[in-house]
Image (cartoon, rainbow, N blue to C red; front, top):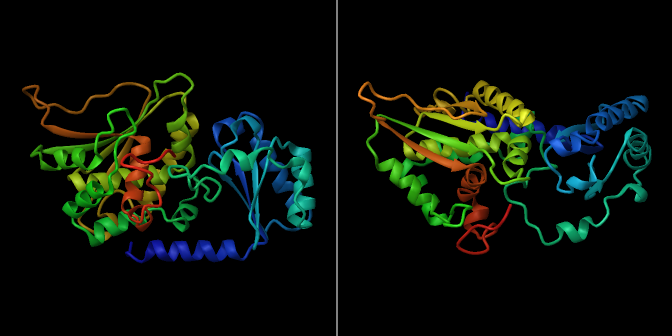
Length: 336
């Protein structure tokens, strides 16, 4: 695939989006799905078909929209207007939303998400900034929002050493209490002379009731894969693994689909972006796994292990927005 292909994909997708009356994003994260979001999406599709607007309105699934207690959530963004968030929809109210808002252009006050301004006004999303903007099951949608642009820049315009330097200067640190510098960790791995190196995304969550990694993997899997690939290029790895809990079937399914899509477009696999860099990603589900050892029992491998959230920030560290301070509130990055 030519290096111009991502731009061509993005341009086609953006033109298609601009040509529609509005975009309707239905939260397809696990929380909303558990309260009936799939049925709401089907009702929206039926209602649009009944009035002949199925080709003029884009209905798509998206990642977590934030108000998990108020699902199913639906976001409507009409051409030339801001996004409007609706809460606790069912099949009946979904039909009302289509008639009044999508067709009539009038937001349905009784269905609006309550307290959303107070909840979101002081937040600045970083890790989940694409929720509501992309369909995580369509790579074209993700590319239109910038997916794989940082990876393309890294492997076609920068050396591994330059990527390491960029990450070091970005100030990116771990999300744990130690705040360990990402650039220092990567530099250590890059300097080793191991025969093979691996990048591992740790998608496990040990804290009770913690679902951050699940939300990320469900809502923006391509960004996770892109971050792993950038790290692999910087340290000299050609193989990656994503460890995912077995209790996250939706995250697993979307990751598998994302890997297939990225390999098809040569964003992963052999000769990424038609360069000499190759990187393959496999998934390990719900149980510990070991890497191959030498016959004498020596592990002649170097492993770079990163948490899901930090991998997402690796992309931001290469973008102008990060360098201009948009994402930073101090030496340790702000919350997602």
